[in-house]
Length: 267
Image: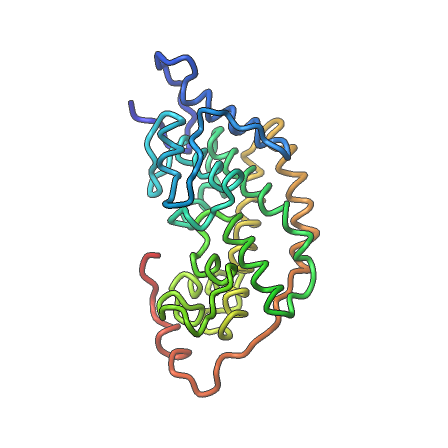
């Protein structure tokens, strides 16, 4: 049976003891608290591969990152809040759009999970990020907390040397870093270089997620809205204080004018 898209909330009549939408609602309700108690039926990730499809299956449906339904959104919520592996999920703009305007328990779960993951770490980064260690810690937390975060952030957060990374994955050449820098919340696609170019991209994505959460609060109801508003207050207080060190692009570089000004393909 096809599960309705995020913009609607279907009532499923399935013959199992706990229906898929019951599980989705349970995930949403648990995410209203700061220490969710996860249903044992939700599969655990082993770290070897992205597991949102497996979590969606254990909820009772298939995972779709192009036109997500309530189950897909709930699966991503579990990946973010329980597994802390946001960068394992593809298609960041799909999830930003879902947080921005989608309705239903899966969409609410996604907003609550992302806000919870961000709020857990916001205060420790609410200061100038001047050292490499500061930048790497922030990059790691963005990769954990935001669905679809660039894998370059996860690599840098884990200690990768920007100069030794494969070219297309390095912060100077990664399409997803450039995409984040080019967001309205970023300093522009030609900004900076190296580790702190990556940190600036991660902050732009963080701010884009925060904006989407604020917009989505308007379509969130009940206890979920109360919990979301509480987390947004934490994020609103901390985010303006997160200031990565400013770095300039290399003098006389060519990618500044050419590669980083070209149109982006998919992630």
